[in-house]
Image (tube, one colour):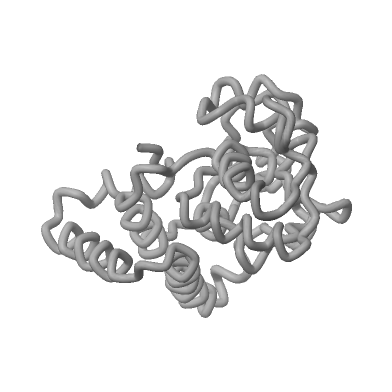
Length: 216
């Protein structure tokens, strides 16, 4: 089972507190009651958004966060998604959202291995939904992991051109992280975005024609 690093770090920080464990259990139960995978993904995304929006009501947070529209440094990292998120994103592709299939195939070959993913060049690691304006073409339906990364330090430090871990200070998003952790904890089929998305699209290939017939 693949678990997001930041959400896992938050869990490890508070796991000894019974109130926190109860919160995770309660969140997990709420999520598990939603049987439709796409609705489940959208429910969790909405909950994460609510937690983040609550933090941004603090003017100091608004002032300190350095992330701006068009900044795409973090969009060159390997992103973990749940299977239901992959289904949601695949729906967007079905609806006509543009996708860079060449990069999708290239990144998918790395599987779920971060080591193999970071063997790719910085340009090859760009998210397959990053458009020519350095903006996310599926922003409203972006993965849960992408919704909790807010940098307080110089955004220049976010670039990971050589695959090294960036030296950045992140906004603490503990409540949102707990939703992310609870969500991933339910799934046995989590994976890297490109790897899981390509697999989902191939499964759909009998119904709709994507350029995915070549084996990679």
